[in-house]
Image (cartoon, rainbow, N blue to C red; front, top):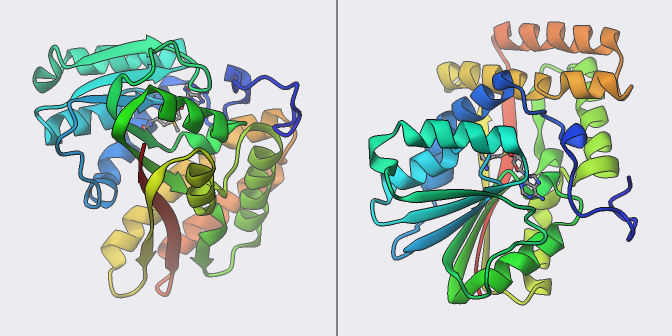
Length: 281
Ligand SMILES: C[S@@+](CC[C@H](N)C(=O)[O-])C[C@H]1O[C@@H](n2cnc3c(N)ncnc32)[C@H](O)[C@@H]1O
């Protein structure tokens, strides 16, 4: 299915989701949310929002953080996948501060069941990159936001990734991952386009900010942690890329070897930037 094909379905199907829905992946999402919490929430201010729509709620890992940081907020989380929603339900059910403050629904973000003008805010984190038609998600979010409601998006900019020392098989793997996502399921470069996308849907007061994880000899402990985090993130797409013939086993083996070498290299550098966008309806 090509995302540019107008007859294609808006909804990414379960088989085409790059990271998959295994319990290992669900745990990775939880770890990712905790690991990146400071980076993501340092620049967000959800104060004043009563009812927040969380699009692509996944396993509820971001919901847990939002409910903890903003005791007044109530979240309505949607996701297209049953396994994610079941996992989110189980995890949020066990958290005292979440009690009575969240609802979860199975819904496709490109065609929501909500009435127009329902929410004060919308939060979307690492989701639009996986959607073939992100403009439809933004159009739907705008529809269901109240006038003056705010949207908060965090997204990848995969063109920004850099690793020292040079690791040819990691690049081969990375380019294959990006090509696959770009051709089949979404847009790994969407971060840089958020301003245009929001403007096209009629949002105002658009603010985009680039944030960078750049670690070298000045901070070897953090560098080590980010290389580990990134290795797990890269490999979470391995099975899908192998199954679809996008990459071969030998490249995966060599890429893993290179990543282990980078982790041990005394002069390693890790660099990646992501985008945060905010706008008003
Ligand atoms: C990488 S996960 C991110 C989950 C969560 N936002 C987080 O940061 O932990 C992306 C999630 O978006 C969901 N998703 C992708 N396309 C969707 C769509 N069209 N409608 C609803 N959910 C979607 C996937 O099922 C998956 O759970």
